[in-house]
Length: 360
Ligand code: ADP
Ligand code: MG
Image (cartoon, rainbow, N blue to C red; front, side, top):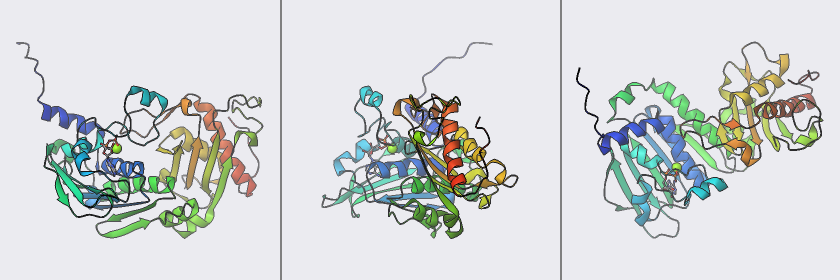
């Protein structure tokens, strides 16, 4: 057999392959758009999707907006207003996004419209991208803020389209993402609509319990108890199991809400964890939470939890793959025992568990 020629792929093909890395399903698009709205300082973020997001996704916010002359840059590759160079990255990023690739990649695999008006601009403008083809900037009437519409996701990448699950499953993923951000930002009014029907809408009054009420309903909200823990609360302040005094605690604080053990469901989907304000899926944090309940949960039942873990910025790597929500801790076992202690203390305070088994 003759060795085949090695050829450089054309730009469009490279673009679509790369897009598949970031945009896996409608929920990944929703995640990126909601993060952009939050980064833009929005106090309202309205998400509405059609057919689980496979047919249409719209995210509208009242944030700072994008000036007409910046719209092209907003949808361009590696273009961001959030960091300037690698030093900014090393100093730590305060925004949820910074790679400048979300709008670009979404535009490569859908029909994307970004319509925006900064609050002090007289008129708004919009730009469309269809399968990577960037259109002209046109004037557009719109309220202050930004609306991003994504239609026909993956229409030009049939292989990716085939991986989409049932509409209901895709919507579950969208719901999980939007819920995650709604609970992390009780000061922002976040709403979600599916096929024209409202799923939930938080008030944005800054109260976590009120956000939980909007998202999970009254029964759950009323069964939630407060968690507020700092290393001084535990004898084992550095979390290493030796009872040593606080030297360099791996966790600065754990706050949030956890449910009464009887208010449990058959899935782990209601264990929402955040590290330094970022929504993450960290199995270590989930397991620590479950361990705190000890034997109080019925078999295969999981509680509701919204837990914010604050760790020193240098101890956690957030610069992981954009699609992934996983997080890496320098001192995972110590973080784990701190979270377990935090939840345990709250449950003990309310007499919901009996005594503490030794923490391991
Ligand atoms: P990143 O968020 O990593 O900067 P994106 O591709 O998501 O990259 O967005 C590119 C740029 O477009 C952002 O840096 C921001 O300046 C602008 N932008 C995107 N969405 C919004 C929004 N909802 N409101 C204001 N500006 C936005
Ligand atoms: Mg972004």
